[in-house]
Image 1 (cartoon, rainbow, N blue to C red):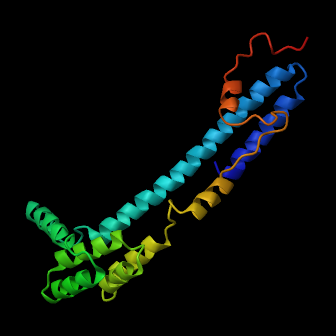
Image 2: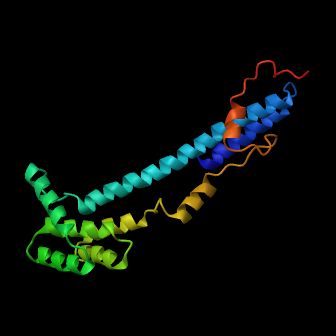
Length: 200
């Protein structure tokens, strides 16, 4: 279900509950709390699923760009990749890393060049490191497309994205529930309805 469908379902459930005359006010509030919690949990799950999907896609693209794609998948490759990563970690400035990457590409050491680009990507919040990643893919069309796809993904840690998510998956309380919020809603939803269904 989409967020809008979940909200519409909540509205329909709330109208049905509010229209029942055989319920006490307390029973109505408890039942409203239950359908609200159900809708809220469904929206929370959708939001988590979206964030997880972005994370999976980013991880897949990172593996394509900085992993061992294009190399023989054997133990020697794993060792070589680890060694290249260790060497790349020694370069503390973008200038050092750029010099080493140029030398690696000149010498045909694709593994080291890729490891240096991966290190640069880890610091890509800094313009000089980010430029190094772009330099790495500049003559590699496939890698350039992969980087472009990575950059098109939202940053799930960005405050603005989180605000947009909160708005997209937000949920207002249905009529009749009042201003009960947070754990109070869960506590109200957990109340038993025995003896409270039929109005006196």
